[in-house]
Length: 257
Ligand SMILES: [Zn+2]
Image 1 (tube, rainbow, N blue to C red):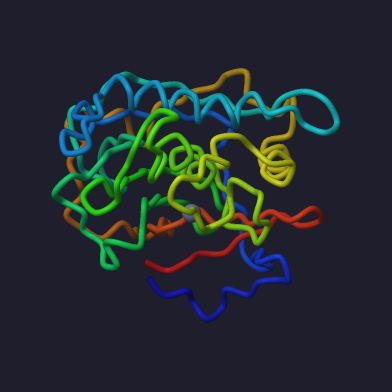
Image 2 (image 1 turned 60 degrees about the horizontal axis):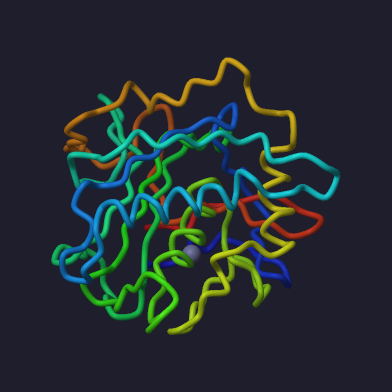
């Protein structure tokens, strides 16, 4: 991946130009692929439970001014497909998938997971997000014993991208871009993470008419569009959600795939 030349960052690593990313109305659904990871001995039920826990970390954060983020994320139950990406012409699924033998990206042994966020370049509202976890090359583990690459930490971090946050240069933060083997710190949020999610989704801001149906409907098969995820309206696939958060700034830019 290459960072675009207009990706200007400040001293904390936060992007200083571009739109912030957000789900309109704070409302979104997510779907865990039905397979789990056979290679790592992780069942669908385990992934689902950890994904739900990760989402709850963000939804239930205690904002500094009181209240929780205006964010509502609902699981649809198991997804029947494994294809990530945005389909501009049909239904979509916001997918969470572990890839045992189909990790498509380079630097396979360095990247634990990848979140692709597709959004409207005019205002930054997200239309699709997919989390892919590198169970092929990373030693993904669950639980508290023999921790290597901790799935709970990875999911909490990637859901931060899913909801619109970028990396930040705060070592203690879940949205720090580095994760050491054996580390479980990212399972729970740091003050910086909480301030970020509360800035994107202020308490009380959720749309009461909340509709978490994916763009153009839920796609049971979640087949990918044959075209690249760019359309005339300006939708663009990015490999990371890119609102960067810092205490005084919430803006974002794309990191080009
Ligand atoms: Zn990340």
